[in-house]
Length: 253
Length: 124
Image (cartoon, rainbow over all chains, first blue to last red):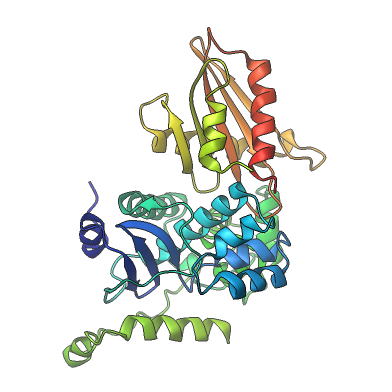
């Protein structure tokens, strides 16, 4: 029996809270204790999933945000205006939700806080119980480790091995490999392909296990533990938000 | 333009249907489920069928010309399992899984119905 990653999420679900749960690596949006959306700088948003592969022109997406964003009904607008099928919207939405939640619920990812009443502009599409989201995030973490137990593979630039491994590469893995230029991380490749980040982590770990891409040798130096006075400052309500902003900015540089 | 639940409920109208689900084969996540599950646990079933779907979708033997795999069919003495891949205009890896009673179910009919539901799910 695995322990819960976020006791606060369990409590908020029990009290049927509405608002935004802010963690170091992402945010979960709740309505009546159910998860209605999730976002993380580590995973492509639903906009990227829909526009990257050409399903939706970027201007259609922008128009939907402009016209329905303030009412918090962007998802509904896309369907009602005939741009997307209900099924397509739900598929992309769930895909983005579970993908971002996986990163947001990473164990030990710093301070957690909750903004009561905060709502996401995408609107309510297909709410998922908090317990299911948490269970799925933990299952995904186990799945990655079963494939190839080297977590550094997830964040390091993907480097192709020079000596061919002789292992077959599937068409979806081929798309990942074609973008592995020694600089892009799995997250960068996911964004370029308009594919969930977790799906790319799976492919990269499989490729690393097969010896087709290199496994990072040296773990990136872990940040040194912060002194107590810094940790206390982290009670500042907006620290988690600022850190995510910083991460997002760094990622876009 | 049905959503996931409407699509799965429509699948349950197919004669002999015992349970239906929509599953992502890369992650093994059940995106939606209705009815019963062969091992009493929709999430565990999704993870198991996803593994089967992945093998079918990714092995060159089944798509020598790069054409996508359409269905995977499993028969057992008591039932049929029909997996239908959903083709989307964005990057995805999902399939519909319909579990049928062997006595009541008609595999040919179920295959036609599930293929049409897979199309309607993403038809704007």
